[in-house]
Length: 198
Picture 1: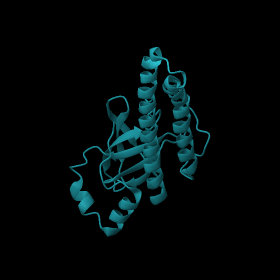
Picture 2 (picture 1 turned 45 degrees about the horizontal axis):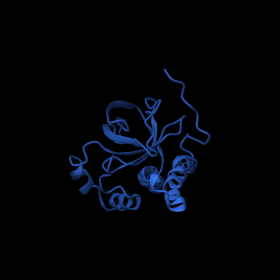
Picture 3 (picture 1 turned 90 degrees about the vertical axis):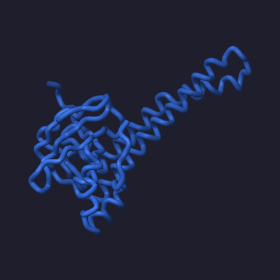
Picture 4 (picture 1 turned 60 degrees about the vertical axis):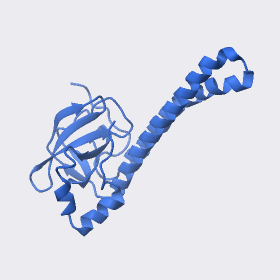
């Protein structure tokens, strides 16, 4: 079993701001690691005006657009989690069971539900890390509402996950019967519609 890397911020549910700030920082660092190089590859064609540099400029243009799209997606996921965490309080949800995977970025987790049952959620790391959450069996700090989804912080490692019900359409009845207060909270958090997990 792998050792759990410890986060440099509180992961005990007392404050979510450290997790959000850290994830924004990761997204920016990953963007800055590649975008300037792609930008230079593209711009150098216009500076030197040498036709043989066209393939390099095309590669720089495509790489720059791809890097911008990844950055936009990462920042959007962190922003969505931030909205959820500002709207709902964090609560420890245990036990948590990993029940499957979809692609290289999405994992299915069964959370011990608030009402004593269980809820299977589709979870994705906010910065698109291909590393799976290390140790989620002991629980997650969850903020949200089961029929709508939410955000979670993994204790110890501090990974920030965005979660939505695995079977979004099946839980439509629960969402429509949730009551006005719960619907308003879900609207404020931006989790009334299904998110794209890619």
